[in-house]
Image (cartoon, rainbow, N blue to C red; front, side, top):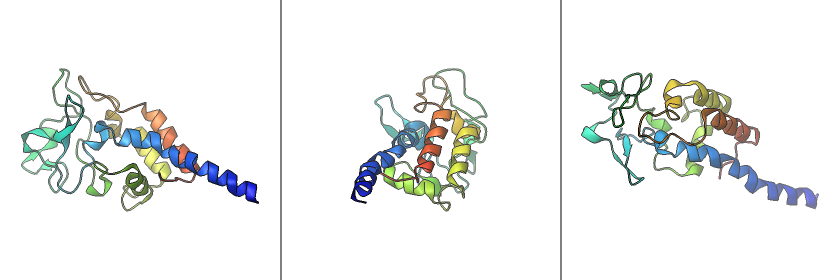
Amino acid sequence: MRALLILCALAAPAAAQSFDPIAEVLLHPRCANCHVGADGIPLWSTEAGGTQPHGYHMQGGESRMGIETLPCSTCHTNRNGVLEGSAPGAEGWALPPVEMQWAARTPAQICEQLKDPDRNGGRTLAEVADHVGHDPLVLWGWTPGPGLEPAPGTPEETVAAILAWADAGAPCP
């Protein structure tokens, strides 16, 4: 019995680390810049590797699709621009619901949030993985257009990481 407890104690840190590759993607600017809080101010990545509030004083507004008089789709169409510096785009461009904020959150906070249907769009973890693997706006993170660094890895690797983490009991760091 004691040996089993020792094995479980040794396995716990490895299981908790199963969230690390997911956190690496979700905290990357391609994801975190739009997963912002109630202020609805999206972020821009800077050349120095930091972030700043979106230019032009843009906000998601109550709809999370831009201030009602100037929606996100004014500049962000259903596809990326072809020139570096042009507005990126994807089908359904908008900010996620405020419940899905993870900008400025820790991996542990995001982990707990992803497991909570009240804060993950009402999804099971399998549905979260499916969302990551099929939603055009999420997939944009890996093909962000000229001059923008894509999210780490691939959508398929991220889906596999989410499913593996779920299979491990979805432990949080």
